[in-house]
Length: 329
Image (cartoon, rainbow, N blue to C red; front, side, top):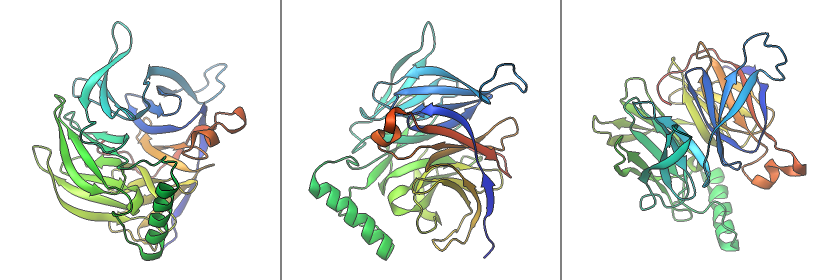
């Protein structure tokens, strides 16, 4: 088994708290800072720009009071933003000043906070959610979570009787919402292939990428394991490249790995590793040629650790990837 090619990340943006959901669109990277409750637009500075303190400029797009996560765009260019804690999908009205209005209320379909999302070229969105209270304080819930993780590591099996599985929700461009898939263990980052016929979602707590066929009406079928991630990894955000590989942010380690279809827990099918300075929670390909790999990194998903010592420790890190971006997001 050939060793994965190593890529080294550089720091592009600092001073974020917990960046997530990166998207590349029209020359800029859009990022949701969940704990700062804002969506940011990050744009590469012109080469040699005088007084530039960093290679990227950052400007606020909109504040999202109930925490932003995944973003995307309708066919007419309207931005969509997942609002996590109230379980809604919002759309951005930019004129006369930035404001948000409800696109779809997902509270009856999502069993806990909504999270990442993929929006295809027609404006159809697929939205994941936690399924259960990840931040529960009771000793019983903490024990159940710890037991689930232990059993999964020892036996390689999911145990839905310990943690509630989640639905993947399909939202049509007109805002109509329905359940597209069930029994997913923390559906997280999601991609749609360039032909619009396959969806792949990261099941964080099952440590795998799961694929579905997409029908013309958006329904999902033919569920199958697309790839497993190596032992010691847990997939968070993902993105797709032109060669058919999927880049996976590993929330348990400072890295983004590239896997091919059929990859195994033993590490077969892992072709590249981008080393980051801290754990990676999401990734996106972009840049002029689509080959800049961006990673959203932070010390932890826990806010207090992200702001330890009064510092905002979230970052955007980046490197040059061997293949360009493909599909959605």
